[in-house]
Image (cartoon, rainbow, N blue to C red; front, top):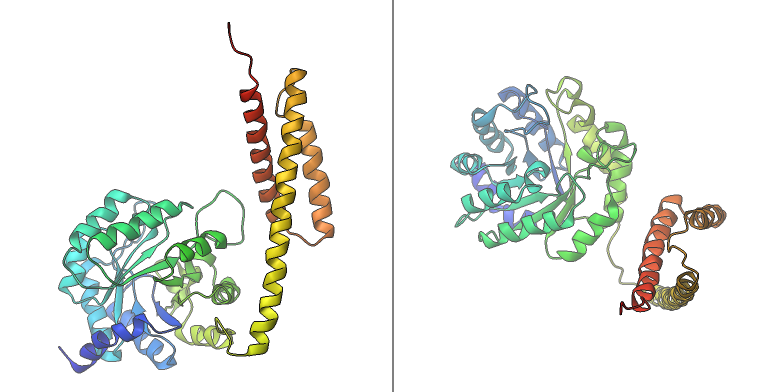
Length: 368
């Protein structure tokens, strides 16, 4: 084992607590030259902590480039020897875990197409039993936090101590400018569920386009992620997979230098005093909103009683459409986003229907 490899391995514990943690490398390992040159140029930026590359590539359709397989693992080993950067690959099966471990890969990650399948996650977890290696887990393709959390629990039960989360966006039916919708609220909820786990953002897979990377990277940093994983290639336009979302190491360095890195807290007494006052206002407003919502549900229950007495259905589509149009119009005047208000109204409507249904069920005449 060479000195640089020893240094890379020894630095893993330090890296695990480093903020921000920057991971980069090509979507796919294509050739020895491509891997080593990318690694050297990333190292030269002075901004990258870990080298990643896809060795086995799960693709949506057969016939697409599915990775070079195990022959690419020695290329990563050589890149580590040249740069001292720890190396990281995706695994989806027990055999891939075994091959990665046999080639002294430093860090593993479980991809979105694997996280979505508990059987596959369990296979990987079983192969990791008794092994000490950091493992990142990407969110599942579909927006299901229970699958993501379940994958964490399975890997934990295998004995892995250092587990990280990767937010790479979700596949949805709605039209967005992104390849995978960020659904930031789900990422935040997952971060709150597992506050002790390293949480990084993958803007490459969220964006699908390199021109959107900067804004998503900044948004992730503003939400206090622990790091970023960005795909980098020496010739992005000629990449064998995901060419549109990769950038050169030099462009990556520029993107990183343009980010505004904010701290989670401040030592200023004035800051804390002002923030405490504003938070008290938030607490009071939240209490008032809850009281208003409770009063609204009480009125909905009164309406349910009148509907029952007059044999009228709970759902009144025309009335609800009127509420939607009026509220959305007013929300725009108040600079509240249409998406937020639509989600709020949908939740409010379902809660109102639930309260009305309870009244009808309670007052239902008994047969006799």
